[in-house]
Length: 491
Ligand SMILES: Cc1cc2nc3c(=O)[nH]c(=O)nc-3n(C[C@H](O)[C@H](O)[C@H](O)COP(=O)(O)OP(=O)(O)OC[C@H]3O[C@@H](n4cnc5c(N)ncnc54)[C@H](O)[C@@H]3O)c2cc1C
Image 1 (cartoon, rainbow, N blue to C red):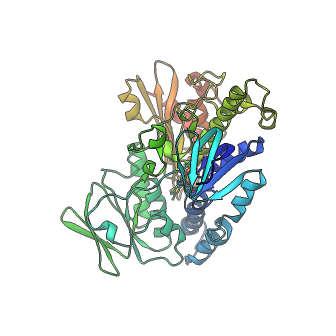
Image 2: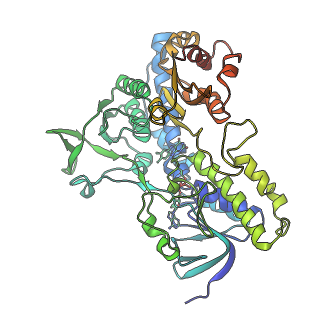
Image 3: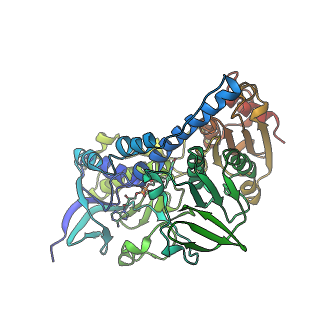
């Protein structure tokens, strides 16, 4: 067996988080081995955020064209999936080839190894026959894969996950979508707008069940207007496929479709990572980390597998914390703040830490500098209208015993919503802590719901006093002016 090769850092999994950590540490002058078994860049650029948002952009263009009939004359629209598939193939994914991404990493000085990495005792990672010994640390960024529910018959059918849905070249006539969360709704609306008969089957009593009920109502209404059939409170009991058609059997009835897309959540596969060799429990759903992304001595984790929120912006945020902490650890190991000579390259661990850390002098956070703070975690479901949310929902705030005040404003009743007319559904909902006089959560639904959200993220993150928010000047006639209306309605 080969002798372990000594390097500074080993990163296992080069998705959004892992690639960012590996690249920045390599740029800082460390010897970094990055291990990826599939495509460098991970889920987001090849089967997630980017291609799905290209699909949404195209589908929204169709919807806007239909709105011409209500606003500006008449338009005939003939959807064609071919340009969308071509754009995803050629512009987004290079036909699912990561040559450019690998070169991006090696161009920063990193060493790339294709294969499955696995911990092999403290400080060691094995890839096939190769073993690396990491002098300063190992970073796990292995992400998640679709979580497939144990429904009778499902595993034997050729169901789709997000991979097949993103790679599709020719659309089916009909599609069953199992799961009414963000990914399910986004894809359901896209395919419906391209003429597919879509049925969404959701076990909870509403779609987007983790968001405010008002957001679920608006999203469900918008999808129904696009022709999507939405079935909530339906628990799939069995799935069958007769060679051409899927049937989802549920509660004495059956739903049929040419294809079946399963989007019922994601799962980290900890059992594959050799965590037992370093004394970490591998039977958990996600890998717990502390506020500096530490798993255990010499091991950090980043991204979806930490279970802190399956978003690219979380992976990037955590990556900044990991980079700062690994460099800090390295300096302490070497014995002196300037020992590495690398701090200046990246602005210093403290500099990076303050750039990513939750604590600011603005006073909203109780987190230490360089520590993760998820109070103001933003999330956007890119349906039309978009559903943006930050922090706590009303229910979560009440469950925490907060003295809650709610402010609500209907976007259609705002000046901009009225002007906008076709496609103007939406609202602002504010969740305030009346005792502290700050917002602890907010939801922004509307044509630009995700963009309007940014102001609310600042308010929650920095704990801006409600009195300051009330005395701000909001440009007329913007969608975000509805925030002012909602503030006025707080009670
Ligand atoms: C359809 C869809 C739409 C999405 N849209 C958005 C969006 O609009 N906005 C947003 O913020 N987020 C979105 N996401 C979520 C986003 O894609 C993820 O949060 C992000 O990719 C997480 O990055 P990560 O680095 O944790 O993991 P991943 O991107 O999953 O990367 C993990 C990598 O590790 C590799 N790997 C796993 N095990 C090993 C091993 N043992 N050895 C070597 N390599 C290994 C995998 O091959 C993979 O490349 C979307 C996801 C999906 C599925």
